[in-house]
Image (cartoon, rainbow, N blue to C red; front, side, top):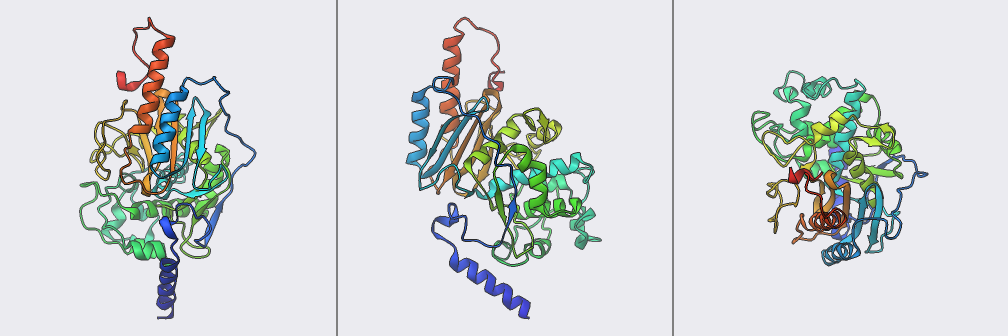
Length: 377
């Protein structure tokens, strides 16, 4: 009874202390957190003036759209070099932002490293292998693939208890099965939290420590942090990874470059391919990442137009936190900020794509072969 009362007090305290604007920018209000150690010596290269193919007029349009839609950070990387970096809301390149569900993609990347190391044999293994609380339970037969593709069949979790309470793992493990696994796409934070539990149990490490060694240091990212449910407790891997705009760009670049950072293969290329393969039940979703096809994904508002190429994929967080990756144009765009209810996802990528196509046409006026852009194939 005392434990229940204490948990209720924690939920009440966290709910009452929740900052205005949903805490996107206030990294310090929530405790406890686990540190994800990075490698602060590494720098993202910056394009020299006039070196890049993205013209100033296109960059100005992108800045204008971001500024008009409650953005606090806009970072554009082309050919692995920063070509534009702009901040508002008192942020700068050192500011760590909670980009909410963009953490899910990092979680999936970490699982890929665990699979590559043989710590997890296959994404088709049942989760009961690690979630022993579900031994002898139908939920134990859910596969990692079904968690990754949001087809687990679990009910939407008790997010008040998971998000604000002191035992997120217990709350997630209490979630009932409501439909047969593998029969319906249902976006569900519980799936990502369970993936994080599997990573921790399969590796025998704290989630933050494994991510640090497997991803963050090899990427050259700066120190980050992840929310915990309690001191020394469970990482909230469905959300709540605090890091900088530059390091969100590094995550995008890691995926754009098929899991490589420089000469090092950090995540297997085959795993990146699996992450970017559409789910049979939702063509706009892979492994914890959204894929930009001709229509808005089921959870998004209307778009003014489709993406200008079909190879766009997105890290997506609440209140329009975004990393857009366009492999065919070697392009990564990061947008962080406050909610913008009229946000139109194709706008920023399409401005850049169309400008790069025009630049290419001007440089190669007689070229008639197939473009490198998969959208033209």
